[in-house]
Image 1 (cartoon, rainbow, N blue to C red):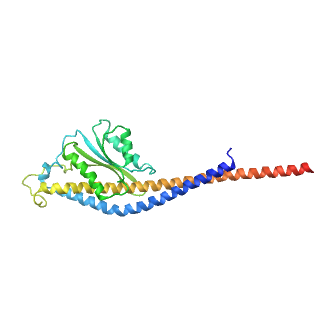
Image 2: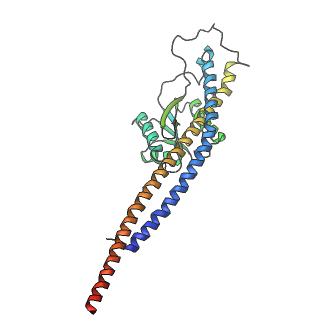
Image 3: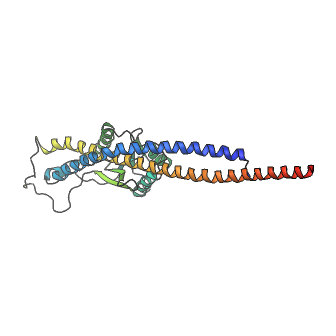
Length: 285
């Protein structure tokens, strides 16, 4: 059985760890509130971009665009948004496992990873990682999203990949985070009869549709990646906050058990000392 000194040292160690976890919990909560303030505007930005693409579907000329015309899929790219640091529960595991289950074992996928945890996961499994973007998941700046989207778009336009998918974690509530995989390129066209060449478009595009697409598609991709970064960042901070709260609770339970053990040991020592004193007094008589 450990000595009282050992138990006391362990109580102090666990208490120090508890204070660190509590501080990390408070930091994660503050970051979560900050990211949640961006979340609504980022979602609105992405919805407007999606509305612009939906309006383009009524224009028959977009069907000949490289961004809308489907190809035979021989190689697909996955933009996967994970965190740079751990201590956030199953935040990274749920998403990376979902991506892994979708890409299968054919080896034709190309990975564009945001976050070091995703890089470690896919590198350990021998996946082809084209580029990794560290130090992006927490700062969530629009220029970072634009860099990621531009690289994915360039791969698609150059024909190096035939599809581009975006994998991220959607924030629903502090306790509910849903991993999502959506296709970015080629942009979808509504199912049904193809549009007729003689049918006028829903709106006029100046100077022409292709010139408009050259500017509109990069803007839409930037919006989608930026919104996904904000969603994932909110999920990361919420998951870290919940993990730290659980760690603080567990540390409190450990301290309570150790304190009881310490008190029992202390009581036993006191009882033993009293017994020795009484025994010595009786011998002296």
